[in-house]
Image (cartoon, rainbow, N blue to C red; front, side, top):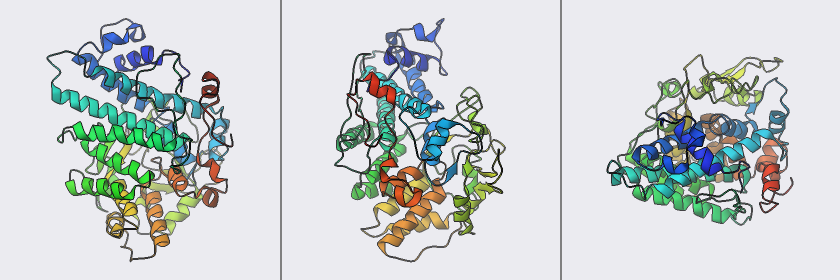
Length: 458
C-alpha cells in the first residue's frame, strides 16, 4: 500500500489535526511539522479530533462508504442523474479507474495513518496534563478506529468471506514513509490484525468511557462482535454481542419511539454515531444530483421499487415509515427515498456507526446454530411493530435474519456485505459472485509497481 499522496503522514496528519476544532497559532497547518502536533497533551487531543475528522470526509463515512456499499446492492438506486462512476457501481460493473472507489480507498488509509501517528506518540509525550487514564482512552480510540478502517477496507476490497483466500488488504500498523510499500496480507492475517487491535483496545479502555460521540468502550465490544460474525466465529460473536446487550448501557427503542432514532441525536439505541455540523460539509445533496458541495444533512438516498415491495409485504413494520416511495418512473427525481438522512426532518444527521439493533441481530445470527437466536431476532421485530416469529428451520431462520437486517440497516452500508458474506451476489443481483468485491484502484497498482495485486476478474 502506498497511498497515492506522497508524505501522507507528514502533511495529512498535521493538516487534519490542526484544521479541527482545536487550532494552533500557525499561518498554514500543512506547514507545521508533525512533531509540533504531538509535542504535548493539547496537540495529541487535537490529533484525536483530526482522526475523527478523517472519517467525516465525504470520501469515507461522510458519503462514499455507506453510499457505495448500498448502491452496489439491491436496495438503492443512484437516481436519474448520469454520472458514469456512480453508474458503474449501480450497475455492478465497477472498474479499477473509478474515481469514487479510488478516493474512498485513500480516505480509509488516511484514517489509518492518523491513528498510527497517535499510537506512535501517545506513550512518549511527557506532559503533566496527560494522565494515564486519558492515555488509555486515547490509545483505545486509535486502536478501535484503525481496526474499523482496516475492517472496512477488507469488506470493500478483500475476500472477507473466505478465510483461506490470499486476497486480504495491506495492513498498516506503523507510520509510513513515502517510499514504503506494503503488499496485501491474507484474509486470515488481516482478520488477526483487526482482532488484535480490538482486543487490545478492549483490554485498556476505561469501562466508564461510554460517550456515543466517540469510539467508546461499548462500541469496541460491539465492533468485536461484528468482526467475529464476518469471520464466522459465531461463538465469540455471540459472546460479545450478548455482553453488550446484558450490560444495558444502550437499549432498543420500542415501536412508538423508533423513528426518533433518526430525528434526535444520541438516542438510547445509538452506541456510536459520527456527528456532523455546518463546518463538516461532507455528504451529497442526494443520490440523484450528487452535489459534493452540499451539506451532508441534505442527503436523501433513493430507494428502489424492490425495497418498496419488500416493505409492502410487512405492513406493520414501523421501519416502512422511513421509506417515502411514490413513483420510481420520474426521470430526474425518483420519489423513492429514505427519511433516515432527510434534511427536512433534522439537520446535520449523524452517520450511525453502531446501533443496538445491529447488536441484537448479530446475536440472533451467531446463535442460530447453537439455539437461542430467535429470542434476539424477535426482540428487534417486536420493537419495530412486527409479530414474533415461530421456530423454523435453519434456512428459513437465516433468511429471516437477512430480511431483518435489510429492514433495519438499509442505507447504513450493510446490505452489499451481507449478500457477499453468504455468496448471494449472483442469486440476488444477477452478477457473478466475484463481483462481491471492489477492484483495487489502478493508481495503487501503478504506485506499488504491482506489488499490491489486483483482485481476480479486474
